[in-house]
Length: 191
Ligand code: 5GP
Image 1: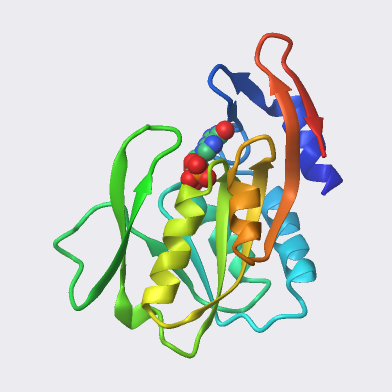
Image 2: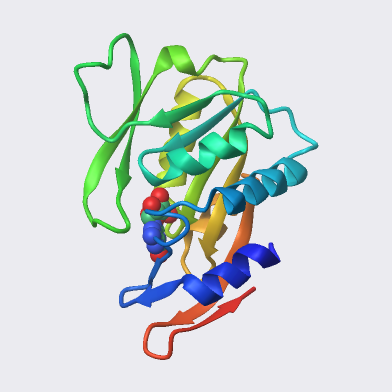
Protein backbone atom coordinates (compact mmCIF):
# COMPACT_ATOMS: atom_id res chain seq x y z
CA UNK A 1 0.00 0.00 0.00
CA UNK A 2 1.95 2.99 -1.39
CA UNK A 3 0.21 5.65 0.72
CA UNK A 4 1.22 3.83 3.90
CA UNK A 5 4.80 3.20 2.77
CA UNK A 6 5.17 6.89 1.89
CA UNK A 7 3.89 7.87 5.33
CA UNK A 8 6.31 5.48 7.04
CA UNK A 9 9.18 6.97 4.98
CA UNK A 10 8.32 10.55 5.91
CA UNK A 11 7.13 10.18 9.52
CA UNK A 12 8.57 6.89 10.81
CA UNK A 13 11.52 7.06 13.22
CA UNK A 14 13.83 4.04 13.42
CA UNK A 15 15.03 3.30 16.94
CA UNK A 16 17.84 0.98 18.01
CA UNK A 17 16.74 -2.61 18.61
CA UNK A 18 14.72 -2.91 15.37
CA UNK A 19 11.88 -0.75 16.64
CA UNK A 20 10.01 1.55 14.28
CA UNK A 21 8.17 4.43 15.89
CA UNK A 22 5.09 5.56 14.04
CA UNK A 23 3.38 7.33 16.89
CA UNK A 24 2.59 10.47 14.90
CA UNK A 25 0.01 8.61 12.78
CA UNK A 26 -0.57 5.05 14.06
CA UNK A 27 0.39 4.31 17.66
CA UNK A 28 -0.29 7.47 19.64
CA UNK A 29 -1.75 10.20 17.45
CA UNK A 30 -4.01 8.44 14.93
CA UNK A 31 -4.59 9.59 11.34
CA UNK A 32 -8.17 8.49 10.79
CA UNK A 33 -8.15 9.31 7.06
CA UNK A 34 -5.21 6.89 6.71
CA UNK A 35 -7.01 4.32 8.93
CA UNK A 36 -9.96 4.49 6.52
CA UNK A 37 -7.68 3.75 3.57
CA UNK A 38 -6.22 0.84 5.60
CA UNK A 39 -9.77 -0.42 6.21
CA UNK A 40 -10.61 -0.28 2.48
CA UNK A 41 -7.40 -2.12 1.60
CA UNK A 42 -8.04 -4.94 4.11
CA UNK A 43 -11.63 -5.22 2.84
CA UNK A 44 -10.30 -5.55 -0.73
CA UNK A 45 -7.69 -8.17 0.22
CA UNK A 46 -10.09 -10.28 2.29
CA UNK A 47 -13.09 -9.84 -0.03
CA UNK A 48 -13.06 -13.57 -0.89
CA UNK A 49 -13.50 -14.85 2.67
CA UNK A 50 -16.37 -14.78 5.14
CA UNK A 51 -15.54 -12.61 8.14
CA UNK A 52 -17.84 -12.62 11.17
CA UNK A 53 -15.67 -10.83 13.65
CA UNK A 54 -12.43 -8.91 14.02
CA UNK A 55 -10.08 -9.78 16.87
CA UNK A 56 -7.24 -7.52 17.97
CA UNK A 57 -5.13 -6.86 21.05
CA UNK A 58 -5.06 -3.83 23.33
CA UNK A 59 -3.98 -1.09 23.10
CA UNK A 60 -2.66 -0.06 19.68
CA UNK A 61 -4.76 -2.55 17.74
CA UNK A 62 -8.08 -1.19 18.97
CA UNK A 63 -8.22 2.09 17.05
CA UNK A 64 -7.18 0.43 13.80
CA UNK A 65 -9.57 -2.52 14.21
CA UNK A 66 -12.48 -0.21 15.03
CA UNK A 67 -12.09 1.69 11.76
CA UNK A 68 -11.32 -1.45 9.73
CA UNK A 69 -14.45 -3.17 11.08
CA UNK A 70 -16.67 -0.58 9.43
CA UNK A 71 -15.58 -1.94 6.03
CA UNK A 72 -16.57 -5.49 7.06
CA UNK A 73 -19.65 -4.46 9.05
CA UNK A 74 -18.72 -6.78 11.93
CA UNK A 75 -18.02 -6.34 15.66
CA UNK A 76 -14.52 -5.96 17.10
CA UNK A 77 -13.29 -7.94 20.09
CA UNK A 78 -10.00 -6.95 21.68
CA UNK A 79 -7.93 -9.25 23.84
CA UNK A 80 -7.10 -7.77 27.23
CA UNK A 81 -3.63 -7.91 28.66
CA UNK A 82 -4.59 -8.19 32.31
CA UNK A 83 -7.29 -9.70 34.46
CA UNK A 84 -9.89 -7.11 35.36
CA UNK A 85 -12.75 -7.29 37.85
CA UNK A 86 -15.01 -6.49 34.91
CA UNK A 87 -14.18 -9.83 33.24
CA UNK A 88 -16.75 -12.47 34.04
CA UNK A 89 -17.74 -15.87 32.68
CA UNK A 90 -15.39 -18.33 30.99
CA UNK A 91 -12.11 -16.85 29.79
CA UNK A 92 -9.84 -17.95 26.96
CA UNK A 93 -6.21 -17.01 27.35
CA UNK A 94 -2.82 -17.39 25.69
CA UNK A 95 0.68 -16.37 26.76
CA UNK A 96 2.31 -13.57 24.76
CA UNK A 97 5.80 -12.13 25.03
CA UNK A 98 5.78 -8.42 24.33
CA UNK A 99 8.23 -7.30 21.64
CA UNK A 100 8.36 -3.69 22.76
CA UNK A 101 8.24 -4.23 26.54
CA UNK A 102 10.15 -7.54 26.66
CA UNK A 103 7.88 -9.13 29.23
CA UNK A 104 5.44 -12.04 29.26
CA UNK A 105 1.76 -11.72 29.96
CA UNK A 106 -1.50 -13.53 29.27
CA UNK A 107 -3.98 -12.16 26.76
CA UNK A 108 -7.57 -12.82 27.69
CA UNK A 109 -10.90 -12.91 25.83
CA UNK A 110 -14.28 -13.82 27.31
CA UNK A 111 -15.39 -16.99 25.53
CA UNK A 112 -18.92 -15.66 24.97
CA UNK A 113 -17.53 -13.17 22.41
CA UNK A 114 -16.05 -15.86 20.15
CA UNK A 115 -18.48 -18.55 19.02
CA UNK A 116 -17.49 -21.93 17.49
CA UNK A 117 -18.98 -21.26 14.05
CA UNK A 118 -17.36 -17.85 13.63
CA UNK A 119 -14.72 -16.93 11.07
CA UNK A 120 -12.35 -14.43 12.63
CA UNK A 121 -10.02 -11.85 11.07
CA UNK A 122 -7.08 -10.95 13.30
CA UNK A 123 -5.85 -7.36 12.96
CA UNK A 124 -2.74 -5.81 14.50
CA UNK A 125 -0.50 -2.82 13.95
CA UNK A 126 2.88 -4.60 13.76
CA UNK A 127 4.22 -8.07 13.06
CA UNK A 128 7.68 -8.75 14.49
CA UNK A 129 8.29 -12.24 15.94
CA UNK A 130 4.64 -13.16 15.65
CA UNK A 131 4.01 -13.81 19.31
CA UNK A 132 0.99 -11.51 19.60
CA UNK A 133 -0.66 -12.84 16.41
CA UNK A 134 0.02 -16.45 17.41
CA UNK A 135 -1.51 -15.84 20.85
CA UNK A 136 -4.65 -14.46 19.19
CA UNK A 137 -4.78 -17.52 16.87
CA UNK A 138 -4.56 -19.80 19.92
CA UNK A 139 -7.49 -17.97 21.49
CA UNK A 140 -9.56 -18.41 18.31
CA UNK A 141 -8.68 -22.13 18.26
CA UNK A 142 -9.59 -22.49 21.93
CA UNK A 143 -13.01 -21.03 21.06
CA UNK A 144 -13.31 -23.67 18.26
CA UNK A 145 -13.74 -20.77 15.84
CA UNK A 146 -11.59 -20.39 12.71
CA UNK A 147 -8.95 -17.86 11.68
CA UNK A 148 -9.94 -16.37 8.31
CA UNK A 149 -6.68 -14.47 8.09
CA UNK A 150 -4.31 -12.08 9.76
CA UNK A 151 -4.22 -8.45 8.63
CA UNK A 152 -1.10 -6.53 9.61
CA UNK A 153 -0.45 -2.85 8.99
CA UNK A 154 3.37 -3.01 9.18
CA UNK A 155 5.31 -6.27 8.95
CA UNK A 156 9.02 -6.23 9.71
CA UNK A 157 9.92 -8.84 7.11
CA UNK A 158 13.45 -9.29 8.45
CA UNK A 159 12.01 -10.72 11.68
CA UNK A 160 10.62 -14.21 11.97
CA UNK A 161 6.87 -13.72 12.60
CA UNK A 162 5.68 -13.57 8.99
CA UNK A 163 7.33 -16.81 7.89
CA UNK A 164 6.42 -18.58 11.15
CA UNK A 165 2.70 -17.79 10.65
CA UNK A 166 2.70 -18.48 6.88
CA UNK A 167 4.51 -21.79 7.46
CA UNK A 168 1.61 -22.77 9.71
CA UNK A 169 -0.69 -22.28 6.75
CA UNK A 170 -2.15 -19.01 8.00
CA UNK A 171 -3.04 -16.30 5.51
CA UNK A 172 -1.14 -13.14 6.42
CA UNK A 173 -1.81 -9.91 4.53
CA UNK A 174 0.58 -7.09 5.43
CA UNK A 175 0.02 -3.63 3.96
CA UNK A 176 3.69 -2.63 4.21
CA UNK A 177 6.53 -5.15 4.54
CA UNK A 178 9.86 -3.73 5.63
CA UNK A 179 12.84 -5.56 4.14
CA UNK A 180 15.46 -3.69 6.14
CA UNK A 181 15.85 -0.57 8.24
CA UNK A 182 18.83 1.24 9.72
CA UNK A 183 18.63 3.47 12.77
CA UNK A 184 21.94 5.21 12.05
CA UNK A 185 21.08 6.39 8.53
CA UNK A 186 17.29 6.39 9.11
CA UNK A 187 16.84 4.51 5.85
CA UNK A 188 14.14 1.98 5.20
CA UNK A 189 13.63 -0.51 2.36
CA UNK A 190 10.30 -2.12 1.57
CA UNK A 191 9.75 -5.53 -0.03
P1 5GP B 1 5.37 -9.69 17.85
O1 5GP B 1 4.45 -10.29 18.87
O2 5GP B 1 5.01 -10.00 16.44
O3 5GP B 1 6.82 -9.95 18.17
O4 5GP B 1 5.23 -8.12 18.02
C1 5GP B 1 4.03 -7.49 17.64
C2 5GP B 1 3.57 -6.53 18.69
O5 5GP B 1 4.66 -5.80 19.22
C3 5GP B 1 2.61 -5.54 18.08
O6 5GP B 1 1.36 -5.72 18.70
C4 5GP B 1 3.20 -4.18 18.39
O7 5GP B 1 2.41 -3.54 19.35
C5 5GP B 1 4.57 -4.42 18.96
N1 5GP B 1 5.67 -4.09 18.03
C6 5GP B 1 6.54 -4.98 17.46
N2 5GP B 1 7.47 -4.34 16.75
C7 5GP B 1 7.19 -3.03 16.84
C8 5GP B 1 7.81 -1.85 16.28
O8 5GP B 1 8.83 -1.88 15.57
N3 5GP B 1 7.22 -0.66 16.58
C9 5GP B 1 6.11 -0.57 17.37
N4 5GP B 1 5.61 0.65 17.59
N5 5GP B 1 5.51 -1.67 17.91
C10 5GP B 1 6.04 -2.88 17.64
